Length: 425
Image (cartoon, rainbow, N blue to C red; front, side, top):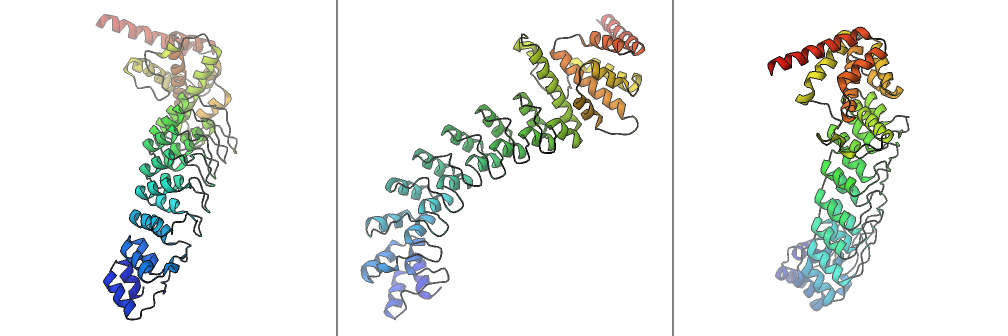
């Protein structure tokens, strides 16, 4: 910068006058194409502006710099409200003309979170939803940069939250960052929960990727399309399964996703979980598939069927089922032969894909034991929800699949346990 620029930049009016009297070039520009008027506007030095216009009679210095910004735009960019008022009221130098990147003064103020400047611009100008060269509105810039007060002011002034930005909607950055209060603000102004970004992702996809459970809850409550697919034809559940986010998978399964949707590789969410060797996730999805299939086949069943315990698809660690889970473990690890668990699975109407998903996990030559244990625990989950007697159902299934020896062994253990419990009581 030249000395005259520095004087204007730091608001040194006396030094500026001395430099002018000494013959300093008043129209000189720095590397950004900015003159002394630009420098004064950036730093809110209204007395410098008054001197330039009133004393030097050089209003022609109100010109665009190399970025296409005039003094008014630079004042907005830096939140200089006094400067904005002086330029508008005293000198008619206010303009909402966009700069070379398409940003209006409202864009510049919104990007940097200058609420007072935004309020002033909204009061005096009709500019609201103009987009810059990146397809961004002032509202999007406020949201994307986390300026919630600015976003609220823009929304209350009538800015439209559902203008597509080319890359994303206003909900995408909020969902990605996990800002629940911001999300609720936008939802309150009818922001579209199903808008897609350049990768065809809905806000729900981004919330799931980043494990933002409160945001996911808000989007689901707001009625977003839970089965929306991205450019890979993956739903949010595919993503949650691949990333092994158990709590997220649980939320999505309770929302009753369409579990049959396949991605571009022909994989359902279950297939994705199995491929990723995420046994817990795979088992949760199978539990959900079987539960919703049972509900569909039994529409007359009262919704309170699982009221004693909240519906969950997570692994069961309850004390109430510990004894029977031990029985199941002994059956799988000590009594069943390699093909026995599959016969039981087919007897209980496990699908081919479900059996393959369980079988995907490989732990060695004795993997079938863990496969059987997993299958039995999945079956137990459904049997309990259906109000069945697990011991009776298991006995009958073993007999039906030609394993009477194991059936008798299990019944004897069950009777022995019941007898011991009676003696203790």
